Length: 114
Length: 114
Image (cartoon, rainbow over all chains, first blue to last red):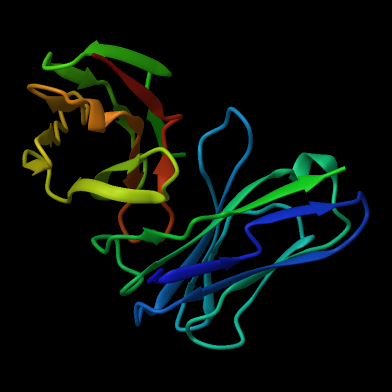
């Protein structure tokens, strides 16, 4: 059974619209993360949360807003979508927010903005 | 800021031959970073292959090994004899001291020639 669920798997959106990417983890972890991978680019860190509190934010744009309604949820709201936002978005989690802990990744949501 | 460099985007090795995938890093934060190799097999999600949290130590998993060389700032991945099942994309990553984010290299796609 998958331990980190990301929904939807694929998403097509029009420029200017808003979408929410869902992430749920069933590993009992206390820290969660979002990463993004655009075509031909490395995985890029976006946010980290620990016990539902924001720890790191590497995203310059306020159009990206993480939302943590429960300890095991970290959704990503993206507003005013642009074609450059097209990427695969990965959610990850780790037991705690310390540097030795392994981060486990979800399968990703592939977003295409037209 | 911190960075990870994988110089080869794609590597092709004949089955049963040895492999080395190069990884060098630059870490500007205080303390030594933790180093990781992640792997993505075809059709699967990103998963941890091995990690080393102490400079000078070696990590190993599934026949792969990597040594944390702080003098050379390298963390090359090696395997003595590759198999077709090793075909995948390999990512080197670091996590700086007291930081939540993983910083990834570009990834190296390994193809095995039968």
